[in-house]
Amino acid sequence: MTFDTNVIFSNLPEILNGAWVTILIWIVTTLAAAVLGFLVAVARRFGGMLLDRAFGLVIAVLRGTPFLIQIFLVYYGGPFVGLSLDPIPAGIVGLSIYGAAYFSEIFRSGFAAVPKGHIEAGLCVGLTQGQIIRRILLPEMTMLVLPPSVNMTIILMKETAVLSIITVPELTATLSAIGSQQYAFVEALFVLALFYWVLVEITGWLGHLAETKLTRFRFFNI
Image 1 (tube, rainbow, N blue to C red):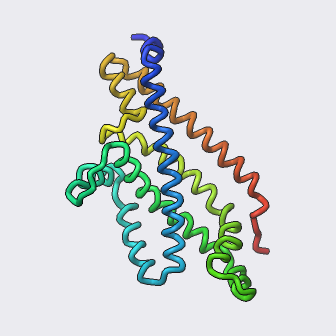
Image 2: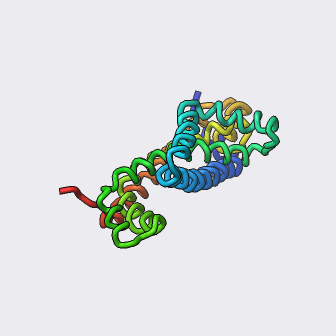
């Protein structure tokens, strides 16, 4: 048995299309999850105890159950509550909600790490809650949340492979079909592993570059 590169090149258009779908879903869900997670973190910090506990319970459920089960519930259980989605929209919704639960905890930890004295100083000079978030919390927490946010971005990238289970035509589904049709499982899995490895390396490099650029926001407690 030999490694047949012809399998890869003869199916290159389908592979590239699957890769594009994977990247598109990954970018959209990462942005949506980060924004939603940030809003949840702000609501938990400034919305009172009741809102904090309600969101805390939802986050605990999302973090405590496998993403595979969650995406099944969104895609197959959605019609029971009037939410009938095609595979790609269902995948985006499910992965965004899943990622938002983790991003919200990342941002909440970042908020908690900002010294209370800085917030009190902002209140003393008459800053509103919105101004405190923009001028104090966001700049100071950026360096703290960047490394775990990059890790979460990579996790969401890998979780896109799970969406093949609901027939999303991303790269895992595409290569699985090619491998089954042409009995080229090794070649298909090699391309899939290489694709994700390259994306992980690029994401890690960009995260490191961003961390270097944002060092001016780092603060030290002496």
